[in-house]
View 1 (cartoon, rainbow, N blue to C red):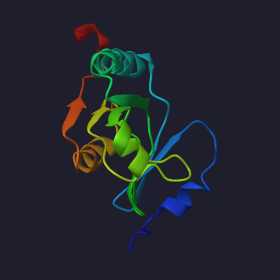
View 2 (tube, rainbow, N blue to C red):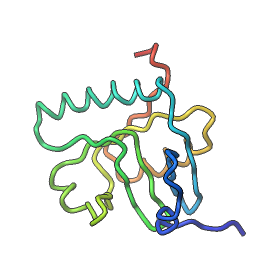
View 3 (cartoon, rainbow, N blue to C red):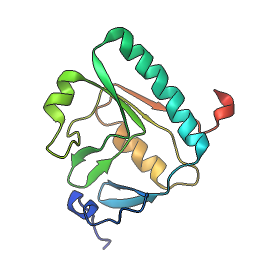
View 4 (cartoon, helix red, strand yellow):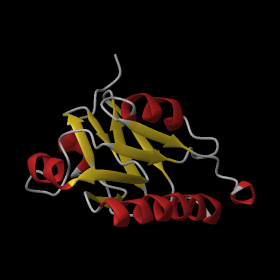
Length: 138
């Protein structure tokens, strides 16, 4: 039987620039994405931020820690959350314990995390944006 990872295990992970996420008890390790990924995230985040400036009803967060359960810790690339939900869901460490209203996760090439992350991110989101990493299509 494979070991089931929990939130406590994340505290012992090395601070080496890798992204560590736990999805349904399975540990996923991702390297820092390339510039295409970052470009796509920034573009989509910018559009979300411009909309938020008009509505003035929430905040846009880059790679927030979402902890849905002790064995589900994920970090979408960009998220939007109302101020009320932010206040009620943030824990002492600054992680969000409830789903945000909108999230963006740009799939990482050749990553086994993509399907699992997409599945867990869909839980509770009103809007989920999945985008291509190809900046030439924007």
